[in-house]
Length: 312
Ligand SMILES: Nc1ncnc2c1ncn2[C@@H]1O[C@H](COP(=O)(O)OP(=O)(O)OP(=O)(O)O)[C@@H](O)[C@H]1O
Image 1 (cartoon, rainbow, N blue to C red):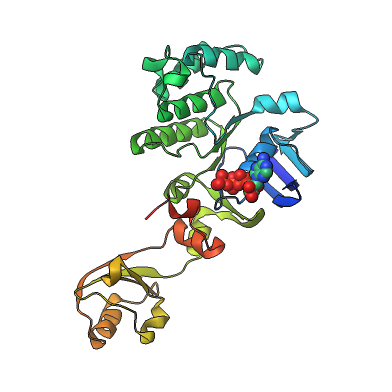
Image 2: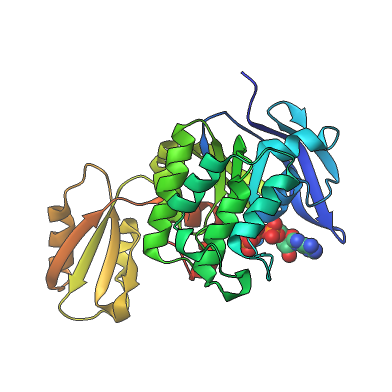
């Protein structure tokens, strides 16, 4: 089966500083694939090389088996990209801009498809507004429609939900799932790791230009063993006693909450007894499983978007 996207030994430097180093990966047709990494990891540079916006220093990008440089006209039609920066055609209305963009790809305008995009992205009531009068959320919705107007087989979304409210994020992801079910392959980046966890079958993590993990989402999640035990204390702690070091403690909420890591099979009772022996009075407990955010932290040592966004 021809892969939807095949990247081989891709490399890009800016003024001698590598932004993407020897990157190889393959996305299969029909996948929803996540490309994650902290700020500056090289995700956008990779996407820009795939879409042809950024010159490739060395390596190769094949889109459904076609080289994105030697078969540029063809591959441009096969891919739809929503770039991270908000770029709109300021003095056009949404309606006019969408018409122009379908012409740009040289595909005949498919009125039904265009209507579906407009309806599903909630653009209907705003079609005749000029772009510079739209809210940020609406501009993003327009950008998704624009990326898809020519019915690409590979849709690339670079941070589609940055700065977008919860309701719209849900609408957007529902739509992405729907078109994926109809056969469109999706490559996405997001700083909201919960979204990546829910959406992606496989996830690649980049850091400082290198690929540091590429696994099924479930395998990635299984990398962190154990469960979290979240303990609320009656009396705040100033520091955690040394004797609890094996539980990898993290003090939170000015010392009034303690997060401990316990074995998957270990019961909370034994841990609570140990806390009691140390003179701590526990007010409340809760357990949870580590999510993608913890795996990400573990692998990269950084929070997505410097801790400004993402899960809990
Ligand atoms: N046009 C450019 N000129 C110079 N340096 C650049 C350019 N584009 C990207 N870089 C640098 O390349 C590195 C990778 O940046 P890139 O934007 O690809 O990362 P990213 O993973 O997409 O980050 P973010 O999550 O912040 O968008 C960074 O060090 C960045 O400063």
